[in-house]
Amino acid sequence: DQQVKQNSPSLSVQEGRISILNCDYTNSMFDYFLWYKKYPAEGPTFLISISSIKDKNEDGRFTVFLNKSAKHLSLHIVPSQPGDSAVYFCAASAQGGSEKLVFGKGTKLTVNP
Amino acid sequence: GAGVSQSPSNKVTEKGKDVELRCDPISGHTALYWYRQRLGQGLEFLIYFQGNSAPDKSGLPSDRFSAERTGESVSTLTIQRTQQEDSAVYLCASSPLGSGYGYTFGSGTRLTVV
Image (tube, rainbow over all chains, first blue to last red; front, top):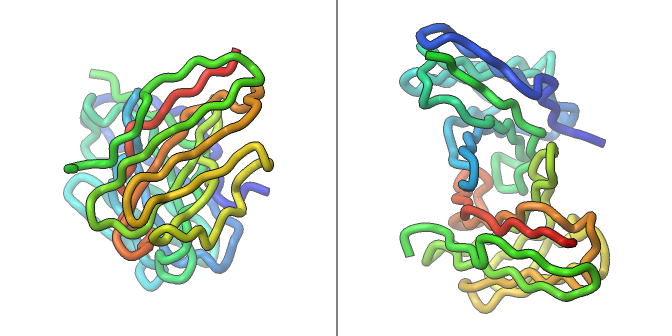
């Protein structure tokens, strides 16, 4: 039973354009959501998060949107840069983040120069 | 140390052998997590330590898997009688006070069972 789903295994965009990565979840107890970025041979690194009391959180080029009624979140990267090429994992947690993180399978983003 | 350190970075073992994976968390981080990522899959939770106790070990796939932690320091994940399906990248993360949002991951140990 996959509680966090990233249905697109890969995404390719041109440099300067917007990248939109999507994530769906099934567990209504999740109230804290995070995006991690992973380069090959490295561990995932935290990118941005959002609490369920918000519907948007922005940090520079990165914005996460949360639609609780649809149990859907998305990560927008504008403008996309070649250095953004990586695997992006969506993760969710219950109890305000004090529970363990549940991860999706990841989406491999390629930003073409 | 400055980050989470895992050793070895790569391990090739024969089926049926035991392996031990090590994680050095960030100093002062009370929570420590083990995850694994099999090829084409997401990060799969294995076990969580708060200090040296393990309040959640629900992700350990079988009794061949065990883990321990010394105080709020080093953790070892042991896999006995390894099987080919154990091949994966084993990732360790630590965080302060068990906060889910404060994870810092190590680079992982790539285990290959042949």
